[in-house]
Length: 147
Image (cartoon, rainbow, N blue to C red):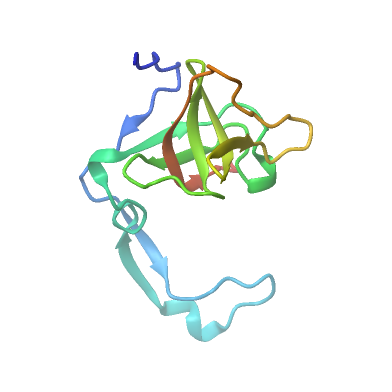
């Protein structure tokens, strides 16, 4: 099987160097936070929290709005782990006829379907002889709201 060429948004292998960010030990409410929580700040390694398999984990930037119902917007970055076995209901990056796509996996009774999280897009149901391969499982997504 020939591996497709990666598009301009080529995944980048996750660095093993720590990426330290501030961690506030509080849940964020849509109201007023408790003043007592103002000083409960730790440092955590964001990559250690998100990445279980460093050698099999990639960042990929998404183009399009077919997954907006899952919170994955045009320009979002998804963290994809190729070492996780894809299961029914997972959001995955798949290769369909040589093109990459991000969809929700439906797999029942040996049949597969890739479903968009936007009703304006049709499901991808592999036809006889069509090449569809799940490339990896999306474990997180990030959308930066500031430009």
